[in-house]
Amino acid sequence: MNQGIPGSSVTAADDDLLHRSAPLKAALVAFGQSQRFTGEFRSAYANRFGTAKPGNQVDYINFLDRFVLEHRSSDGRTVVEQFVASRPDLPEAQRAMLRCWVTVVEGIFEVERHDGDAAVMVNLADELTYRVRSNAGPQLLEQLTPETILWARLVPLGEDWLLSGALNAAPLEARREMCRAAAEMASTCPAAVFRNPDKIALGWELHHRLRGHFIEFFGADLAIVTGHELADRMAGFWNHHATRISALHRPASQDAPDEEQPPSVPRMSISPDLEQAETVGVMFDEVDGLWFLPEYRLIQEVFADPALITGRRYREAVSGYLKSQTLPPIALRRLAEQDPDRAGRVFARLLGKPRFTWQRDGEALLRRYKAGFFDRTPLPGVTPLSNRQRAFLRPRSDVEGLG
Image (tube, rainbow, N blue to C red; front, side, top):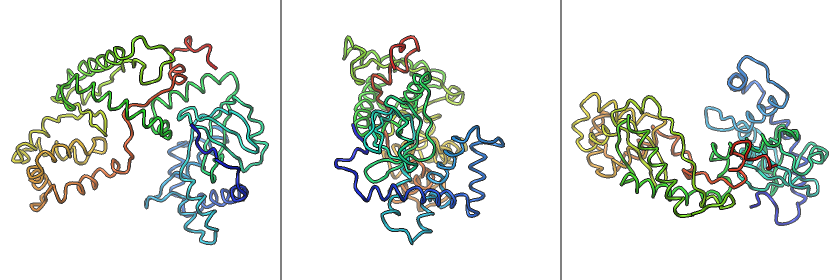
C-alpha cells in the first residue's frame, strides 16, 4: 500500500513549499530555543541526556526536532503550533504546512528507488510506501542507493513527505540488525504499525477472533481468578488460542498470511501486585482489549451493595480504580451500566456529593479522572506482522538467507 505517493505530478505549489520549508524550519528551531521555552527546553534536555552531552550530532539534531514538533507545553500546544500562532504574517499555505508537521512518522525505512528529486521508501514497521523529499538539496537523497536501510523522521509536505531532523543510514553489515529492530518495533509499538489502514482492519479481525477464543476458554469476557492462579490460567488460555488457530489452518506454511499462522505462546510475566492479589479480574473487552484488574471482586461487591462503600477497604478500592491512570474506564463503566442507580449511590457516598447520579454525572467523572484514556484512538489488541517481519524475529540462524 502507498502512503504519500501522489496520483499526479508534483505541483509548483509543492515545490514552493519545499523551498520555503528550510528557512521556516530554521526560524522554528530558533523559536523553540528562545527564552520563551528555556525551562521546558532544559527539562526536555535533562530527560533525554541527563547531565551528559549528546553522544553525537545526529542525537542532538533529532532531539531538537522532537522538541519543536512533538513537545507540548502546559496548555497542550506543541512548539510548532505556538510558532504558527506567533506568525500571522505567513501565507496560509505555509501556516497549513507547519501545522501538519505535528504528524511525525519516525522509524526504519528501506529505499526502493528514486523518483525525480525524491526517494521512494518503505517504512519497515507499517509497510507503507512514502515519497520523500529533502530541503537540504538533491545530493542528500541521491547518495541513498536502493536497498539502503536508514532511520529517519518524516513530516507531511503536500502530497509528499519531507525529511525532518537527521537521518542515519545503516552500513551494509548492520542491515539485518536494522531490519530486526524494525520488526521488533512493529511487534512492541502497535501505533507504528497501525498507520496502515489495512493492518488496522486485519488487527481488529484478529482481535475479535482472540476475544472469541478467550470467551470459549473462560466462559465469558470477564473471569475472576486468584492472583496465584493467574499465570497458569493465562498460559492455558494462550495454549487454547494457539491450538484453535492450528486446527483452523493445518498445516500452515511459513508463507501463509498472518491470520493463518499459529501464534507463539507468550511468556507471561505477572507483576508481584497481581500475583499477591486475592482476586484478579481478567477482562477482554470488545474495544479496549485484555486487562488485568487487581482486587476486582471488591469492586463488583460494592457496586452490587452500595452500603459497603462505608468500609475502608471498599472505599480505597473504588477510589483507587477511579484515580488510577493505568486502569481503564471500562472497569468501572461496565459495572455502572449494569445498575446506574446503584453506581450513583456508590459515587455519591465516595465523593460526598449526595446529588450525584451516574446517568447525569458518570461519564464526566470518568473523563475528569481518566482523561488520558479518552484522548487515545482505540487500537486493536493484536498487531499483525507480515511474513518478513516474523522472519526477522526468529532466531538469527533462521534468517541467514534474508537480506
